[in-house]
Length: 468
Image 1 (cartoon, rainbow, N blue to C red):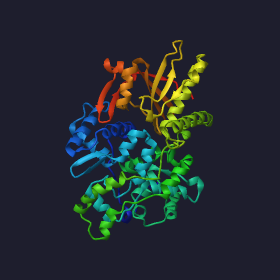
Image 2: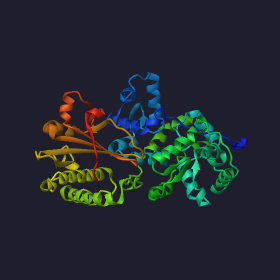
Image 3: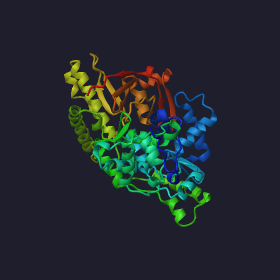
Image 4: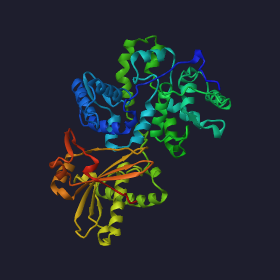
């Protein structure tokens, strides 16, 4: 079997910063987004020190060398654009702040891919210079989606990591826009017909593999065996992604103006990270939780969600919240969970007393419920919801100062419901009596600019089956 070789005149390997935490990227990004967004604006050196401290505090990182910590910082900043630095001061970028706020990892990866391109400041200036010299203008997620949407033979509408590496990422005919989609498909399909072999070693396929992995985390594609297919359930997001694609042209403009130097590339770095963190306006990639739960469950949750929205509008005159807004959806799921528990325990008379409390009332919790035993004691529940494409573990949450005040006031009546929704499963982890746990050092309470970070172990609380 012949091994494929990209023709020498077209071969150009492209690469990007690769995170050392790739196998736990979702956990790291949520953790770091939360920590960085609480730092505010600091002197750049002070911000870097605080970021190093946060990285070391990530679970199992306490023994990392300073060099490794600094590498993590570079990877988080350069690849994911979490930090904006200009004129000697640094702050968390919009992408980090929004991820910390909405806990929507699927949305985060969509936005990450929406801006990711070659050339970009996720590589060193020298590499950017060489990419520009080779006229590379490549938006990998955009190209791969476009490729799979426009396959001439439907049964062939997939791509493998090996094919993406050798026939797309490492080929100037694609990355420098020297051929059409039809011509790319011809090479892909011809290689399949001839049973072409590819070098599939990890150090060769890692960069194309990374982008395909991120596309899967964004829910754009599904992996079946070795083949990646477009996710048909994401049609609206995919269309939005394709119709609004924007290329950062500052680098290629330098070559057009005969100003392509390392110094001029360095001067554009701030503009690149501003581009990555730009306000997307009406381009909204917020995740629809409905795609993660069954149709029967959707009907129940939709009814509960509508009552929450009506209550919000009447009480605080808020705008109507989108059907798929994560906070509201998560709270609707928990209200239904609590009502079902009370019904099952014979407390039908308490069900109608379960209340949703809008955030703008600032009472420090989301839901008023009751114990499902004979005590009929009230429960004050703060709901923290995260959505991701894969099941992940989180041992850190952020609470506001007001939530902590309420936890201190009501003590054993205060609950934090940590809900995580993924394609594989829904998990509900419950912390009870936060004040007592902090007092007895069962959990760590770490002050931040806008509240507190809570660090906990699985032994600090308990998992409960989520009833939907």
